[in-house]
Structures are given as structure tokens and as C-alpha cells.
Image (cartoon, rainbow, N blue to C red; front, side):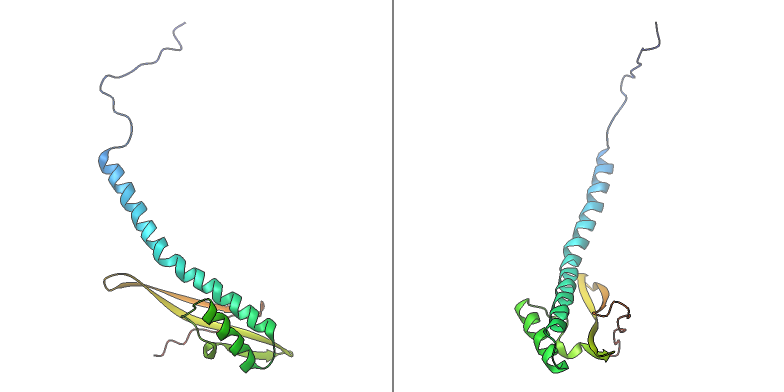
Length: 134
């Protein structure tokens, strides 16, 4: 039976070329740079969401909730959002806290990422738009 014969070519190359390897490494480096720069911003956003939830749980007057948020933000070294930037509303008797802010992450030189973060303790409400007037 001759059906199982394999043909090999002399000089046939297999694998990735050096140029291909360099291109793949360059793409991986760029992705790693983006991740290194952006992950801290998202971690800070999650910390802010947790601090806002704890401030709502603390309850009390709006001033007391802002103070509770500021204490938590100071402990966790949050710099992007202060208590004075929170929007506290009482619709239906229960207070809801919402926030919106812009985070600018420098990439290199004069190139930066701008990320708009927003959140609310009210699951039915949209977060307020970030104030872009400076």
C-alpha cells in the first residue's frame, strides 16, 4: 500500500520568521503598555464605587455621607473624586449617590487617554454626565 507515504521537501522552512516574531513582540509590548497604564484607573474606579456604597450604607444626612466617603477615599488613597463632587438625591425617601468624573492617563509625550467614569447607587438611574466646563 502506498497511501501512507509522506513527502518531505528539502529546504522547506517551518516556523515564524524573525520579522514576524518582532512584529508579534511589538504588538504584545504595546498591549502591555496600555494595560500597565489603564489598570490602575479601573482599580481606582472600583475603589470609588465601593466607597460610595459604604457612604450610602452609613446613611445620615448628605453631609455625613460625604464625610464617610471622604474618610474612605483618604484611607484608600483615592485622588480622582472628592466628596464634594458626589450628587446625593432623595427620590422616594431613600438617598441615592451618583458620581461622574474624567480620568486623564498620560501615555507618552503629549499623548493621553481620557476615560469618563460614572456610577450610581441607584440601579435604575443613569449616572450624571461629567461636567466638561473647566
